[in-house]
Image 1 (cartoon, rainbow, N blue to C red):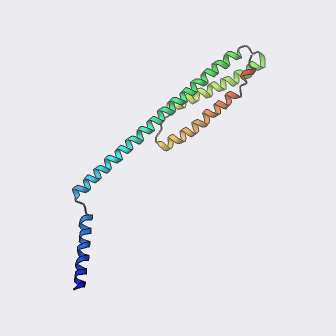
Image 2: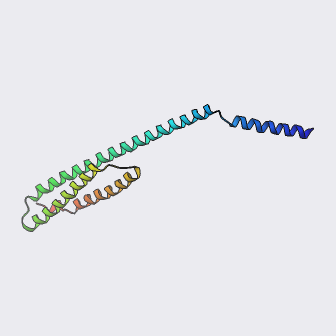
Image 3: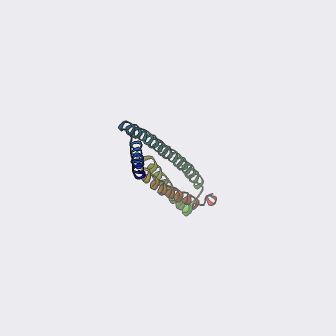
Length: 146
């Protein structure tokens, strides 16, 4: 008798678990739709953050490039008083700086990222290039230009 009650109780428990664990197709569809909506919102937020990062970074780099253009103009003005070999050396350095600056401007304006990974690689490489240009400006001794 106890065995029959135990078997009956066990069967009832298993049936209860099975029935409560199974969702109706409508409930599963509703849950899937909620998951899709949540995923779409997360994707939209990630895309918006990615777009803002690109816009912000591009603006910052164009500002830095514009500042370098101002420095180039300043160097050219200060170079005017130089004569002979000094003037030639400074002209070559300043022309090189100007070409590198213009090349970086073109790269940042024309770059179209294909994805977040490519964008991160681009930023790393571009940061390196812009830092190298900044170091090159320090190699032109402004104080020695009369």
